[in-house]
Image 1 (cartoon, one colour):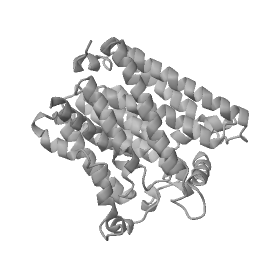
Image 2 (cartoon, one colour; image 1 turned 180 degrees about the vertical axis):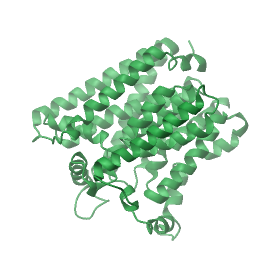
Image 3 (tube, rainbow, N blue to C red; image 1 turned 120 degrees about the horizontal axis):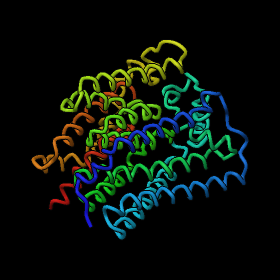
Image 4 (cartoon, one colour; image 1 turned 180 degrees about the horizontal axis):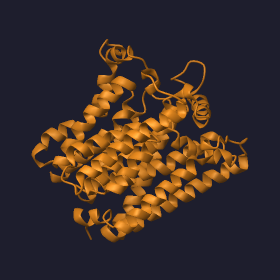
Length: 391
């Protein structure tokens, strides 16, 4: 049994189901952020509840895998769907284990405290919406999800691990669905493997803040909704995803530039632009209780730009360039090799993301933080998978 891209697009073309999903996403978002808006804090952890939460997290993960199986078995057949679910769970477990070993259980980022201690302190600052920890306090949705478990007396590190387990599972399934819009079953599996291959490098130079799993999920599903023309879910994904990391709002610009053939384009472009700008500034005004200056955008000043570009490694060369070539640039050669056979939407998205992610990292982040390049890795992994599949 096999499935065509048109069959896959039909999943995202049922208006009644789409609106049900939109309402559900907004309802869940409101539920998750409620304790932060009400200034709730975590309660002292209980060993019993912590162990229970861990087992419950695995039970939810198994249920999610069953849902993935049910969705794919109708298109792929039983054996392929089972193999896919096993691979998704395996890749999730491997990536999270590498993250745990190289980030969570080390002290390389700070002199006086471990990464885990810093994560716990940051969690406390974000759930209190402290301007002192901006820009992390603008990205409070992942922390709110973890806070709910802390309110239930779950230890922070266990709550963090459960959150990562569930959203990295969703991330790899999203990558599979995105790749299937362009290639077959084996090509989509290759795309997942290519993404997993560069994850270890993306974990360098960051201390394990909670934003990434949910932020990356919002990117990959936004790619899906851009390709399938599902505007309500695209808009919802951008707005909710910005509560994990505001960079996803840049896809509003991609829609404005490259989706002019959509029905009612002018109205949709105005809606997505206005809503994205409103969400971006509303969150910052809410956290800062007033206007925002440049340093409050992401905690850096104007001098940061030159320091960022020059950031040298032990050879004296820019440290970020080597790391970029191992992540964002890793699969660019396959775009060149397969240029004539690559879909125009993949080309546009790859170069748009290259520009946006470089500029945003240069101005507001650090170029050595290669996790920022992962959305582009998703797109180029699909390009590379299509190339190998064609061979």
